[in-house]
Length: 176
Image (tube, rainbow, N blue to C red):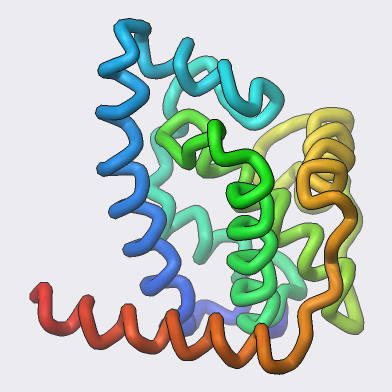
């Protein structure tokens, strides 16, 4: 996708809906631990958790990354695969309101670097994400260790995730 293209592929809406549903389920779990959500969020993956919730809605954030970078929609699928790997390796870490934005931008950055022909610098992604370059670099390193540098995605695995995401489109239509 070319930088500045204002169209938003369906992948943005599907991922945003999945992330919102997951956050809606996970925020109360963290809150029921008897600690403020921000403290519970920090217990699992401190580096990815912010002090406060990021006010920008996740769908707008995903769109913002897409239109401001040379990121292909297929990289969003790969980023989703990486996030799944991350959470499978760290089951005590829950996607929530305090970590979703940092985890998402880091997964997308990693996917773009590994699978797209052209990619922007960490400094550029940091600017788009509105974080410092040093924080973007640190997030990337922690994420790579978090997925144990398992970045290769087989074609059949990619296809299976695409099928899953397509099935979510059907459920989104039924929910409306």
